[in-house]
Image 1 (cartoon, rainbow, N blue to C red):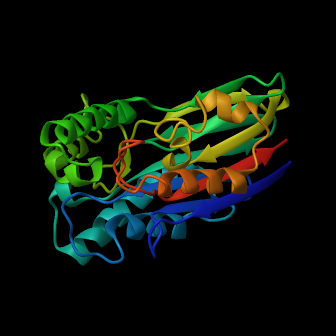
Image 2 (image 1 turned 90 degrees about the vertical axis):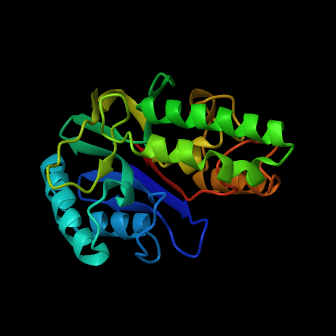
Amino acid sequence: MKFEKASRKSHYYDEDRIVIGDNYFMVMDGATPLLKTGIKPSEASWFVSFIKSHLAKNQENILEKLDKISLLAYQKFLQLSQNSNPQYFPSAGLAWIEINGDIVDAYTIGDCEIAIKYKNDNVKRIIDYRLPKLDAYALECLKAKAKENNKSIKESLEDIKDILLNNRMLMNKEQGYPVFTISNEPNFQYNHLKIELSKIKEIYIYSDGITQAFDELKIYSSCEDLFSHEVNITELIRQIVNVANSDPELNRYPRFKKNDDISIIKITF
């Protein structure tokens, strides 16, 4: 087994994190709340740093540990912000694998993903579609507002802030979407898939900065199309950044920001 990792931040700070353990690999993508507390450099960056700092290299029982991290982060957040309103809480998508003997356990929550490439070259995308579905609805509203007001997509972002806020308030609710966040009563719903190690050729773990390649920027037609190729992860990031930078007003490829943080791990067996 060998692994590679690559990342690119879209600001002077990063809201993604990569964690490499003795028998696990994890990617995190923090989401800053739409209502700010003033935590620097951002609530999301603070949160993913907090998570990473509390995961040991030889970490066992990751699910159990994440519950403890959520509670500790909740207590620390109240100290830093003096604010217990959930509208101000940061959240994070997580995706990770644990290698347990001849079994790989794959977990996701939020909008981080895992792609399993089997030895027969079939690709399986592990994702919870509830959050992307809400984002897709918000994006359609954004495009409609831009057309109605004869403005660019970028100029129209403020016009759908209420929709984005409403979507954010659906986190971990029955009609909403599961995501990792701070909580005094942690109880999260994760995707979980067990795969026989002997059947796997490659595993890709990545944030939604990578999904732009097939969802928004249309460099590839689908997740399966992307990972059916031999993927150079550094070159893939370069492609994504170049296409995103070619569309600063977001009109050719409608999306919520020009550039997103990008993180990916490639594991080859």
